[in-house]
Image (cartoon, rainbow, N blue to C red; front, side, top):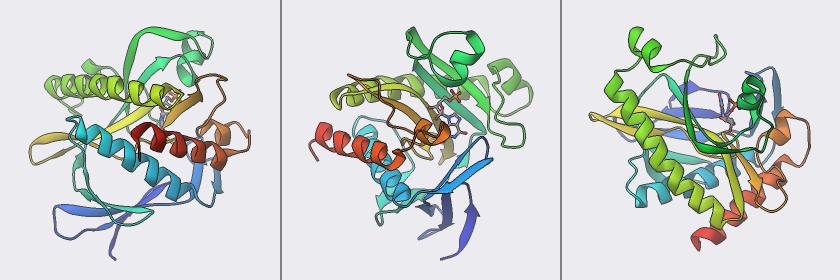
Length: 235
Ligand code: 5GP
């Protein structure tokens, strides 16, 4: 396979034609923009399985995504898209950088869903950026940003109810979008690497914060998420 790009947690290869690519999930875990790095056997398989279940559920509910088909336990065929250089962060409960920045204790439910934009730049540490700044530097148009926001809110209502059924609190997460055939589609992954997921009864963390905060039991947390999502989806 011809490698097109290697990122921190995935490798992208050439696909079946010039409209598709193969995305392969790695076992590598990184945090702090790559400062902390470790191999966690099984992580790639678990993230692929979780993200595929979520992308299929979203597609069934009218969300356009890059997923074409699942190829193996760790790889998918995806539409090639021109990635919008914006990370869309969605928050239902205060945690992480939001709690630090605004002094809101972790675990505080937010009165409305928060959608934030960050510039997708490892070099700059993905800084938060507003609509006005994004349009000013030509990263996206206001229409595109409005579309990202409404897609994020639709995804949030679908995901919140899915995770609730799985006995999991969907705290916050990151989405990435791209443009393909003139449409904005959901890209990248939705997995415990990119979401904060807490057990609904105990608030036990089942996501990458276990790795970021040296809590141990990372793979066990991801396994629990997969098991519960399968049950919630009847799969
Ligand atoms: P925070 O802003 O609190 O660091 O992150 C908010 C949410 O977005 C968390 O669920 C976190 O996992 C996710 N997130 C933010 N930036 C990134 C990123 O660069 N990569 C990944 N995988 N997730 C991110």
